Image 1 (cartoon, rainbow, N blue to C red):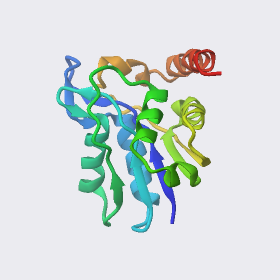
Image 2 (tube, rainbow, N blue to C red):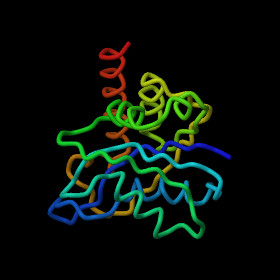
Image 3 (cartoon, one colour):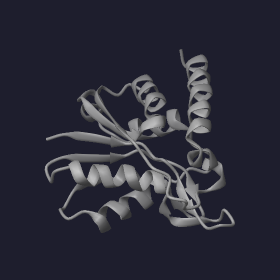
Image 4 (cartoon, rainbow, N blue to C red):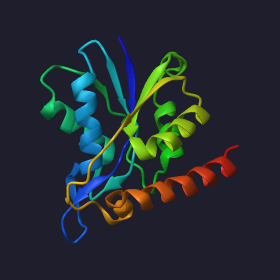
Length: 175
């Protein structure tokens, strides 16, 4: 039995940038990965995330997993609907606030898009999670639009630079 924490990675959009009710191409690749490796006795914890056009990233991920998994997976989707932007540390803190201490202290495996995963690992450890392993899921660009907030996912070098600066910001804010 494994416990997986799934870090959000955006929402799909139409060509005008309007959010669509489905995870981004990056997040779907992360979710496809977890659907492939998870067993029915594993626990999947979706980190709470941003609300986009009435649906949260974690609710969209929950629906995606349920619709695309060939087995019944145990997925926890916290009842959180944020009213402001949630960054990666916020994802971790909100999830921690909705889980029993036994889950937080039990070694979990973090699942996240590769480029985002280094900062996500730092943030979830800073929030108090015991991370035993990190699944750094590579993603490929599909040409599908993503919400403007996450435009840099379409340009991996820019995404890397963004993550470096965001990582530095998180370290300065939360040493």
